Image (cartoon, rainbow, N blue to C red):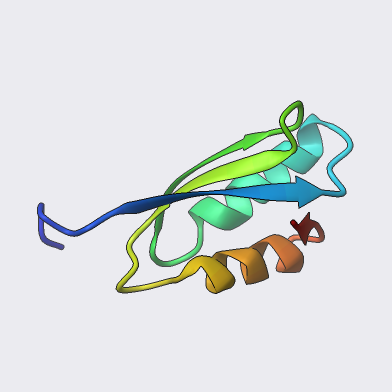
Length: 74
């Protein structure tokens, strides 16, 4: 992987999280996804801030991961 890979950030609203286990579940699901380099999930803000490589995954792909983890992207 190049040190100069372009990274982008997106913040996605997330509905359906109720506790810190939800936060851990979604964080793990996002971070284990190819193309996502970092994810910070906030129960209080009801969102996920995701850093990703747009050559490997796009915003809709990230939203799909949120759905696969059992939550609703907004």
